[in-house]
Image (cartoon, rainbow, N blue to C red):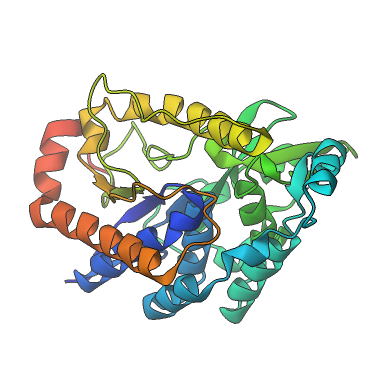
Length: 326
């Protein structure tokens, strides 16, 4: 089998290797992503999604995510007082430069630097030109108070999407508030907009490729880095003991409030793989090899559970009632 599916990847910091596990299982089952199907992601989902869209072979992605030194991404001062000053002066304890260089290097290894190199060439597509890209990166623009999908919305900034850096967009999507400095993008009128972690507004943008006017040519699969939520059950209590904990709690609360509403929709649950990546925080930068292996296995198992029971015809019959597109 050689089947297409659009893919949406949830954010989750260091838990991104679970996303790679799910992708590996799906690929072994015959699914292909990135052309003509598309990939979208937030934060860690944007990191993994960008490598996949750039054409990195899945075995190489597994190796990269097992070997990455997350501790090196903490490129602020070793001293708490200095980090506190940095937070006040630059809105983030860590510069995020090491993370940006790492992302850019991985993409350059695949021959990709700009979104123009990720153009989607699909003669059968009815997509508007600004949506014809293999990758969509979700960021939060706090200057305008809205979720932004890149490269689709570079035109709002007066910028040519094809010329924009993929690594810049992914770095912005992974800008965990308080932890990393936010990114700034300069509009054509000279005004600068502040962009931070896409997870603030949607950590799991599963509906991003949906169109109400036509039946999809193939499914959209999503991978979440958590177990399926139980109705009416609150998440486990977390202490908030300082600015770092506050930043983590702020982002997770906003993202979970938005995305939990989606999980009440049967049509979304029906196309979501739930990787049980509990017990690991997005900023556990001391992640050991054993935990990475556990996360990778959780991703593979989530995809296997899902695909064992997936039937696209049943999904369309239950949840899609629009004329077929050609």
